Image 1 (cartoon, rainbow, N blue to C red):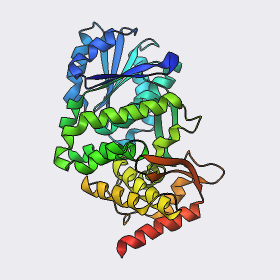
Image 2 (tube, one colour):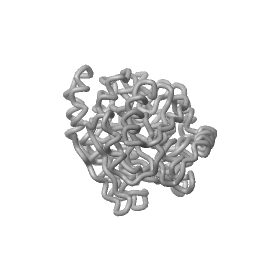
Image 3 (cartoon, rainbow, N blue to C red):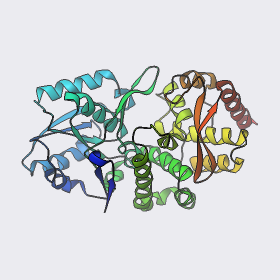
Image 4 (tube, rainbow, N blue to C red):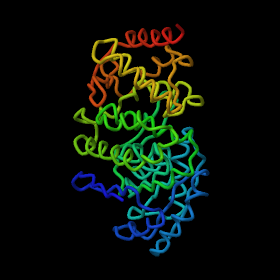
Length: 361
């Protein structure tokens, strides 16, 4: 078990890594919150872990309510947010009460957003149950919902009260969910820590569960370091976390039924590393190594299903676009990237088409 502090002055909080769900109530009773806790979860997660979390909290004499939503990225919308807020009103939830987000990245995104706007802000806790959420989505205070025009176009920066990670929740996940988190772990290896990347290269798919503690802890440390330096993306330092996500979000939102977040980010990393090679920033080997890792861990790694023109259309709505230029985080080598690389959309389109053409040859 590790306790990692996120130092943000008055907004500082702890990330509890490797702690059992059965003990989460002890962390809530230690803090100055109201008498009510609302567990926000989905129909897949709550039947597995909801009872354990609820019983642990009730031992602290808190009143516990539940709000259960349908699973999936499609729920990140205004209707879901309004429905949750209506439930909070019906439960008489006040500003000193707490929302506990039990689930993956979708739940932490929605729950964090609701917490940031309900009564102008109430406390919330993230209890991530997926690998993706444990290494990335639950940490850092980014909240958001999607619109037809783009992913996470509406959102806030609003830090959790604390984050509570139990590795055991990963045992209930199908591999299709595990690989979503592996995609983000690859990202962390490329942007900051080649030991993470090399660990993935040396680890067989069947043995990856034996490396969770190392991989999750190292990724959390990287994200905490970045957040502490640039909490609200005002200094350009937090931009490093966008590697693979500029292209990746365009790919994901262009066909959200067929591209999961992890697969889209993997394709984004492959595409962006190839862009880096083509403009003379990084070696082609980086592209090849990322592509091989994607294949090894059964992530999408080919552009045959990508509609390049459609991706460019969605990239035009990307939050990172500046003065008509697309901004990328591009790798110089494994463990080192360059942020703020601006490219014309026509140049990007040409390179994407080249990737597709090369795959056919």
